[in-house]
Image 1 (tube, rainbow, N blue to C red):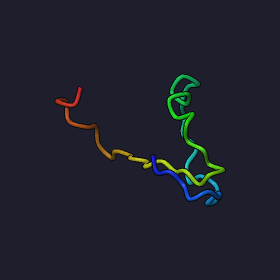
Image 2: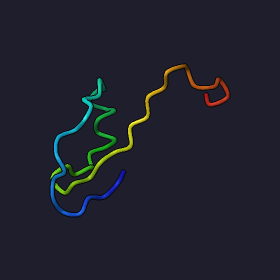
Image 3: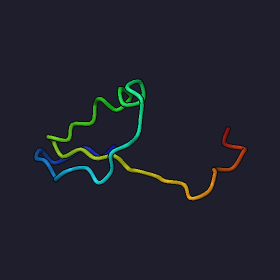
Length: 51
């Protein structure tokens, strides 16, 4: 998470398909303050060793 400089920076580039429980993990992100999240998308499955 990147803490913003105190003002909104626009609208999100993506709308994640997530459950309410998953979304709750990021409740500290304050878009009105300009906070943003790094979004990582895999084109292939991550290595099995990560699980």
